[in-house]
Image 1 (cartoon, rainbow, N blue to C red):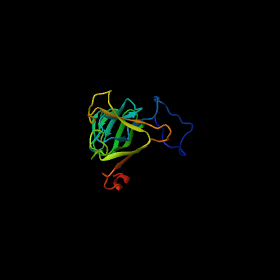
Image 2 (image 1 turned 45 degrees about the vertical axis):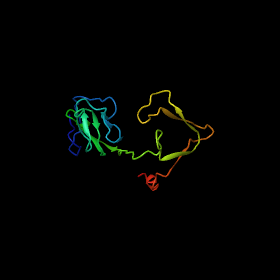
Image 3 (image 1 turned 90 degrees about the vertical axis):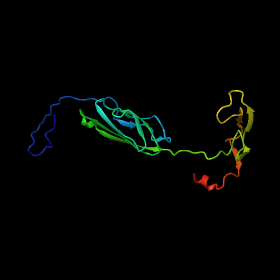
Image 4 (image 1 turned 30 degrees about the horizontal axis):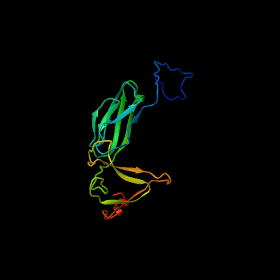
Length: 188
């Protein structure tokens, strides 16, 4: 039932309201769960409306260049991201209980693509840097555990043994390959 409105000078007291049914919810209020930061072109990222009602309808929207791989219309989606950050939103509607209607939004940051332009120190060939001071022992030894693969083709392994007498490990490299160190100081 419904109340007849706000009481005024013509309202008769006491009033009564007949209750048809009572709906009891077990658990917390619904919320949008998922990561707020993803890697460049991340694939298979899951977002969920937690504690949702079974009678609800879910309408999801993802940022430009992102694609809903599965789950549109359900409480959980799987998203493949592109390069652009933006909001993951979900409009939840419920025809049997309007109090459950809600809009959820989570701003997602897509990290930039990391590109390696060159390697300062190469274990397998010519380097653009040399190891200077180090607080522990750095030794090149034959690799007897695994077969050479990937970037390491010689089968050699560097092992580092820290000096327990010092609080921090330090390995300093020397290079003339950096033309302008300001690029590294300002994170460019």
